[in-house]
Image (cartoon, chains in turn red, purple):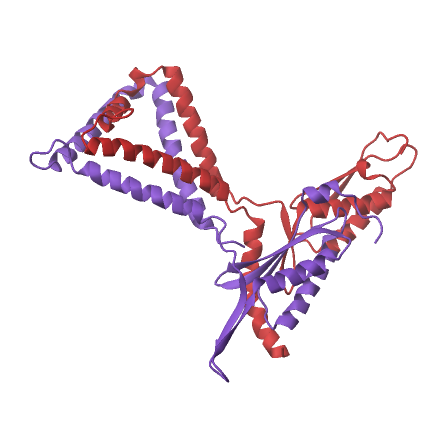
Length: 203
Length: 203
């Protein structure tokens, strides 16, 4: 492949790479969509049954469309207020949950690493376990004594030192920042190291 | 990477959420505020009048019920089929062909490159490594062209940037041997197998 050819194809995949990264770092809403489709489908099937019985002049199964309409019109009077309130609250809650799922961005706990050839995404858990290994190597503690959480703009390290062995907070921070720089996460998160005051005995 | 209709998912989930929230909210208001009963009765009476007129005007001579019921039943069938189609559109897009080219010169004929070529080559190269627990490679149609998805599960504590660089190096080698440059997604993740296997301590 000639160099001019490489440059020409480099421009085009970049937009595609951006799209792939966006799709991989955001939820697809496939599960809420499936649940919504099931609700809509079951409702439609029930209405289909009742209207078909009505169109054929047969007796209704649960309630004919007219009866259902009349029941709705009589509403507050013909149901226990407590039952109506509870059922309505449930419907309202489910509706608000679906609305929220549709509106909020739905970011997944994943980060992208810039790369010229491929779209690279990393689960936050993998970054966390890599940072935890660096932190415990510097501090000289066991895996059980470190816990790292990786957020979008904050990396928090919680460390319980071995009793009697001092831990250098700044050294840990420097090593983790270097590791994050090599990972080239964007935006670069802030590093917070929390060293608990009580130590662990017998490690 | 798949062809899940994400925008459609969000729109339809949002519409269902809005409808459910509206119904639930109306019911809750009726249960809580007796002053609204008069408004509700007037509203349902007017609506019932309008519906009665529509059904009366669509009832043919000598028939007991309106033909509109048949129309409603048919539209419910269509809606149910659309709901099923919506569910089956989730997660589609896996393909078995990486590239195919047809040419009339020098002799008419075509070359088809199965996706298994790239998938097996990359998988075999990745599973040789000690620091990778598992790797899966699959081919998907993305924006009208084949794209490779490489999912890698590194051992706990392995730096994701190291894995990313090595996988991309393999992809570059594959580009050169195949003469194709498909879009590539490298997804580095953690799974049950990485959590329960030992962290790698010697590299």
